[in-house]
Image 1 (cartoon, rainbow, N blue to C red):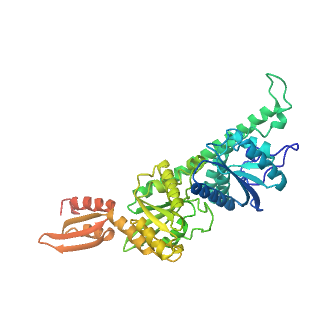
Image 2: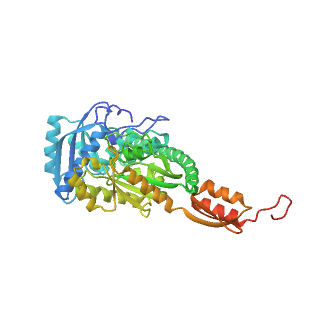
Image 3: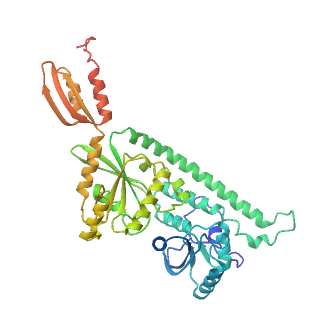
Length: 458
């Protein structure tokens, strides 16, 4: 969203405790200024293996790059758990404060999530902006939200995140308060800001509920349709949108950035009369902020309601990274109620591997399909698998239709595939493959005795 307001009375402006949204239609607020490349210091308090540490720090660097910042310095402390008050230990924090004072970075970013108190104490010690992982992810979502509903979802998540972080903005006014039992202007201003945030969140929830009603109507129509629904799911930047474009020609924006796709896109492809709907939604990430999961839950219905989920992974990643990302995807799918939907693993970006590595990966994942949205490798196999899934959901209809019931035969030919017929003494024996809804309709039509226009049965 827009640039931060100026500091008040010379006090440090706390990004995460900014003023409440007072305008009727606020613009999106960002914690990082995307107009300039900001210099960021990445801090982390970790207790994990060296491989996982490297993976988490690399991922955080990618998040910052997507948000418009460059990591110029790293401070990593290995301890069982972060300091409950300062996140980092005292000694390491003092070293960091000296470095920040000398080099003057634009922002300090924590690899993990910070409590409001930790964030406040870090800013007091470092005298610069401090942002945590959730704040950066919310920033990226705000940058990439394009639809009206997506913008509402992101704004609601941002406000829920910032609500508990309001208490420090008015500290310069709290000093003006009276003694015991009085209500200083700082306290009343904080209450006023929180009230406005609550009102705004209530308005956003109301608008999202209205949007959800329209989405529910479309969802009911989609659920009633016999067309097979396939959803792309996977870690962010695994190439889902590129795969979507290659399969369906959807024209979804594709960039080398995390969370490039937020709004659900659905396109269809068909072959020999069999149609498949393919939906692309937001990419997942480990520890995806719960505010975003809740706000985007209605959008993620595309995944939950699918007949088949294509779990897309980046084949070019190392084994440890790929397994960690796969685990994160499964956790999010379970959280949104899509854990029981059948999965098909797709190893994308296989054009980045040499023949030996690709063969080894095929042996490691024998049931997966290996694709490249760039070279087109594996796309025909993937389409065939999706079409086979669609056909498997169809019913095999076998009916003996009287010669007088041309309406039944016409209905079968209209909706069925692989239709064959064989003449018999009293009627036509017809076989066909049909979507379940159409098969039930044809059976009911065949069971209904055709009426004569003169009132009696023919």
